Length: 224
Image (cartoon, rainbow, N blue to C red; front, side):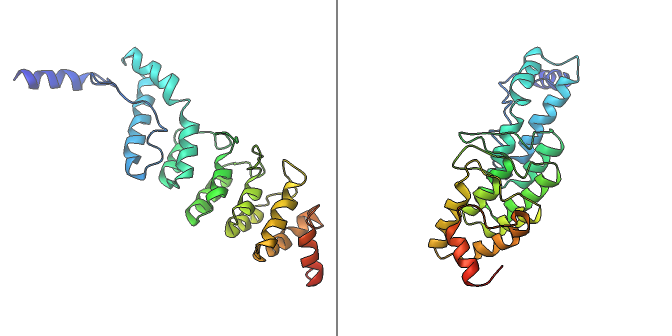
């Protein structure tokens, strides 16, 4: 009977952390699809706590100092692991910044997508772009733009998607970066890359500066 009474007292107090140390971090669970419910529960707990006058002060403080600032890191991690449902939730519900930069190279979520380049990452990228992601955002070298990253990793379909969405192939952090990646891929006998750049040609009106190998390939084969 005493145990039942204590349980009623605890559960009747709104938005209480129930006497244990609650984890307020979103990034610690954002990578794992199996923990999507935990991610949502942590957010909704804080959402209720921040809008109630009956919540524990420490809970409110943790929500303000841990949960809210952690949204962007959580998004970055969810993108990296292609946790699509978490990405949708973090963007649509928590309002994480889709153009936030994270990590050593200041990568945006879209650039992280370009690095992995899987079909699921293309799906996420399409979602991010449709919600305002800056398709031409520049990270710190050697990552550069999402398009440069896709080329560097030879993620052909991802590069096609970015060009279809009007990514600017002339934007790089270094004037020589585009030439370096294109020439390197040519030496690896990866001609698919050049056909992608032919698609980009109307945007550039020329072969990217310094892309000697691409220029030779194009003119030799009378492609433009």
